[in-house]
Length: 330
Ligand SMILES: [Zn+2]
Image 1 (tube, rainbow, N blue to C red):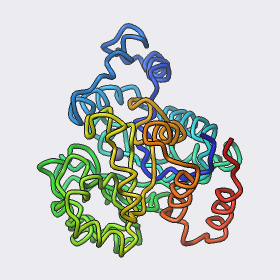
Image 2 (cartoon, rainbow, N blue to C red):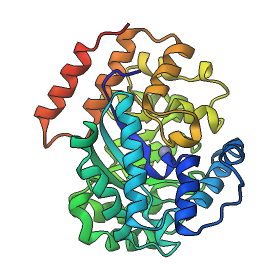
Image 3 (cartoon, rainbow, N blue to C red):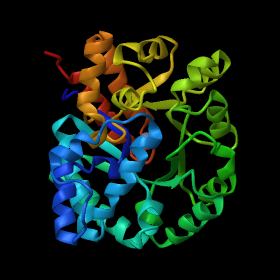
Image 4 (spheres, helix red, strand yellow):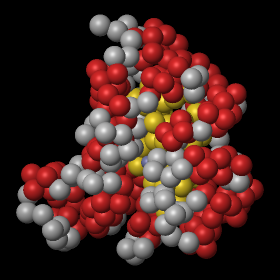
């Protein structure tokens, strides 16, 4: 669907398509444990979040140089633009690369090269969100933020991702306080596989402005009331939820109930190369499976721009919102 939208929950490493993975593997002399792109695609059958993460981290071995990161981001932006994305706030996982000996500067400079020319090349404005891997230590997160200091002009926010259960947000209180002091915005994954209490912690202890996923808030009516009253955006990823079995089928997805409850929901693609579709594909999928009407779809698109970190450029936000209003559904 080409409805104009902002993508606010997108891991750039999760946009690595099998074809690019093989091309980069060959260029960098990395041997993948798969013979063909078809064989690799067949490996994209996941039991849960952890089984996905195992393959996700294994494939990152092909990303070595600035050029690799530029190509990765450029390929994503082209696909996103073709599906109506006008603004993208892109997550990256520096620790997944520094652990392999790739310097954080290589990652950030490589991604930034694609992001800086994206508006001209693809008509997509961009921001970069540095994520901490929550299954690593709080000290490691602090070290990562410290290493990123020379590049902070390229980064708008910090986030928290990877294996959620057993790694509550409060573990990262100190690094989020440091990020605040550095002038960064704050988001965190919470309530995907973890309990509603993780969403509360992300709000109360980390001070996040958006909750990534947040699906399990629906188990806690008081929390829902708070998220509605405070207009806290939730970055939902429907196809991801089905692939990782957070919901059984797309028809079981609580998006309509969440919208009816007044939550500020957005629809995003998470790791589109692995989960069967980009932002527009996610919009198509929820329209078809959940019978969303054009006004509900327009609300989701409007929400995405309202939830975007565009406070420094309200003129741009207003322009995007007017594109949403002007969009004609066929
Ligand atoms: Zn995610």
